[in-house]
Image 1 (tube, rainbow, N blue to C red):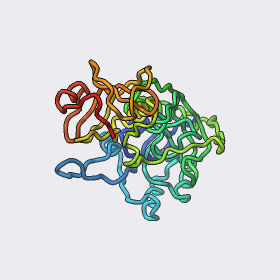
Image 2 (cartoon, one colour):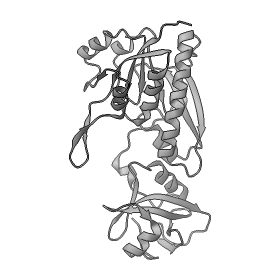
Image 3 (cartoon, rainbow, N blue to C red):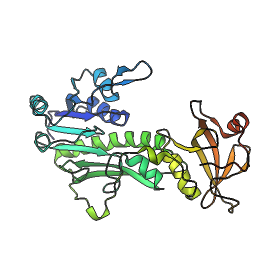
Length: 315
């Protein structure tokens, strides 16, 4: 094994990428010579510029940070070339890499993706895996090419999706699993034993960016479908429905094993935890909600404070 640490450029932006950067920064196998992250964005009521989570981590480790609007610009690539990287590691970066950049490091560019490729290629694999009712997902490391998550796979690690798991929980589990897999991958790259497995394009599925229209609950769907949507959009952006007088985000539900009792969208009964809504197939108990511009609350609190009654229709 080469005793000299690999010179690595890391590209990433959100929380999901931070454990990977931390592991690389702490490892004797790697020397992170630069970090590239999306530009800082204004946030909150004061609209102050806030560091990206990856930039915050890089500053903690005294790693130089670049934040170009477009990483494919020639001037940016020239600057990155000056670091003479052996490897570029990309985790939830948010920009595509040009062929010139992909060819820059001698060991290539690798990516940590939050799915078991070729399933759920794209921007939101965790959300879609839960919304589609998957019972298993995982992380994959792969060699990057010009396509969207189409490169040859290196390593994979699986994890179960439990029936009530939400996107936030799965996200946190996968980001740490991804960091462990990344370091296993780096070690194999160094000693020349990294696998290279082509993806089966016929098995590929896509996980596109979430649109606002996906957030609205369609009560004509099955109770299980709606439950999966609520889980898949928790903690961001949240699924919602419309009562007669106000919009209501729905954060926690449970599928009930009972017969159809009314029209889809009708509030059938109140329970100790909240209220029960008829769906297109099956009943769904709503347990935690958030009226527009209000705090999250139990559905039972919402019944008392917002005069929701059996027979009301949810749209």
